[in-house]
Amino acid sequence: MKIMNHMINLRIISVLKSKIMTIKKITIASRESPLAMWQAEHIKYKIIKLYPDIEINIKGFKTQGDTLINQSLATIGGKGLFIKELEQALLEKKADLAVHSMKDLPMDIPDKFQLIAISEREDPRDAFISNNFDSLDDMPKGSIIGTSSLRRQSQIKAKYPNLIIKPLRGNLQTRLNKLDKNQYGAIILAAAGLIRLDLKNRIKEYLETKISIPSVGQGALGIEVLSGNEELNKVLKILNDADTSRCILAERVVSRTLAGSCSVPLGAHASISDNKFVIKGFVAMPDGSKIIHAEVKGQKSDFYKLGKALSQILIDKGAKDILSSL
Image: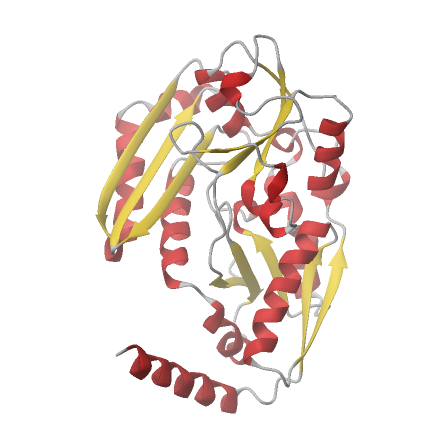
């Protein structure tokens, strides 16, 4: 059966290739940070592996989110600041596609753009990094943790109220440098970025979801194009990972329903095992004084309904009261 499926997939790819030979060159828009460039290179490699005759170039852009590093995202416009310049590049035909971290992609995508593929997810968990401590449990009262994520802050404060949270902005290397200069006792980062840049050795502890539910879309990459480009769509849709897409889209349902943004401490994480779908989420006050959790299980074919169901349970538990107070 596996051999037959493999042969069928090869035939499908062969047919698709025959239909897209008019595409000779693709330009990828990316942020200029080392991690963003790695992500663009990763997608470039995947395309070349399938279509070696297509020339792939990467064009870097500096976004507002990269330049305004001394202010909280919650106060300057949210994570959408990481993608506006990339989308403008698509509109101006300076690039054919943009590669985004799914956690940075706003919940509502304008009609002129299309999310064509979500690639296989890397480890979605948050990671604890420290030069002095092995875990959150080891940190004494008054220790300083760096993060500018209200999602992370609220969950850490709920479980470790004696720790001090201080803002931390900048790209991954900048944040690590601040830690190494002893400005923080520890910092919290997405494990996926550290793994992708071969910095896995910096991780002292992976934070399981009972400690820190990840950001919606964390660990996954999305490919965005202009709507209506069917020829390019045929090239890129093969890069879509079906199970990752189910998980990410269900998580985004939760965030969209609850008006998730950088100013709202909210997280959702879905996973699939043996066709069983599990999605959990939370909403909290920024200081962790009130936090609401919920979890829903079902078949993966019902991923969208399960995302809606989780949202409703959180609302029934009082999520809207928290949101209205923020």
